[in-house]
Length: 214
Length: 327
Image 1 (cartoon, one colour):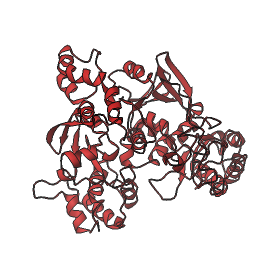
Image 2: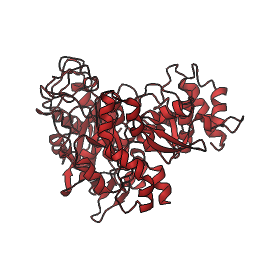
Image 3: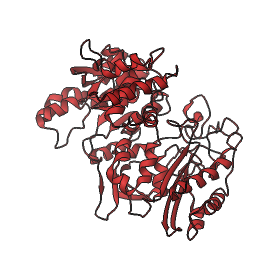
């Protein structure tokens, strides 16, 4: 367990009883390097002395389970979960809208909770289970919420739709889809510039009333 | 975003040791800090992730007070049975803030530490005494519709953006902080500060101090409390004006009252004089209107936020009516 924990928690401070000697030895090469050199590395990056050199030291190991598949990645601490999903894992279903937590287009589930992936640092999501829009369908069988969005025309341009659907699924799971008012309130973190709101609400109500497992 | 070093604190002691070093910042939910870092407003050299510390619990402590760990999520607190039963005002305020996604990330300690949303603070090409002391205030003489009407100075007219903090100020909560020197308790109303000549300081937290939790003493406000938030859209927007109102009513007479406003000052703005004026009065609209009038004494508007001088008292009256159950 401890091994696993250390593996999935990059940056865990060493020298505590929670870290076994074995872990320490295993991690020591990389962690010592990280602990001892960042100031130098950062300065090098700022001075553009040797960006590749600096980058190699700044990257950290991250373990993400995305839609049931485990990924061992190496990321910069400043990389957001959104950028990792899109740029490293080619899961481009999750959209970058505002990139500042104001539009909800980047909504994914982390350990079952809907969050804005644009404000989540990848290193902080290490060891967690991520579900993106790509993880909802079972093979060719769409998720009931995806079906409902199509049926009710819950989108026009479609850019906000992955985030809307991830939020809609969470909205029902949380028990916040009991009335139109409640759905509107609990879907307020997802902006639709095309204004498909009435149809989105209809889609969610239908799935909720259908009583299907979401 | 400027590169930074990332470490994860495994113990509270290691977190406290880490933040004693300059250039180091704590990260919890990150909903505000990551945004500020993307914009170049916050540029820490090192982030210490405290999410693994055991500071998430919501419980009744030995003194019978409600204790909420600094890392409890805003969403968790807003739906906690204990909070809903004992301090429903806090739950209401939390639900009025941000979006469901952000509330799933944001923590109680982080909510307290969030910075103002003043546009001049965020825009690094503009002057802002809070971001860059001595550079001036872009909002004074600029676009100041969202800004403060109480406690302003010629250095800063920004408002504190939190809803949760308005409720905690009204409920006389306490903040528990930890540092190398040990533990310290700060009355919530003393935690945030007015801008004075140092608007760069949002609060009275000393360097190297870590918020570990908040406590709220038992009170009799659960039956008659209300959080009213007025904003440009019905949800997911910062307050133009908000009011936390808590009353203890006995046979139609007000025995005790707590009132605080959001969106009007650099800190959650307690309305002590209005509270005093309510005690002993009948719980009706006339009493509430009088209290609202008293509450607005000393308010000073700027070019674009004159409307707050009218919206403020109307919101206070309305919140008190809801709290008293006469709406």
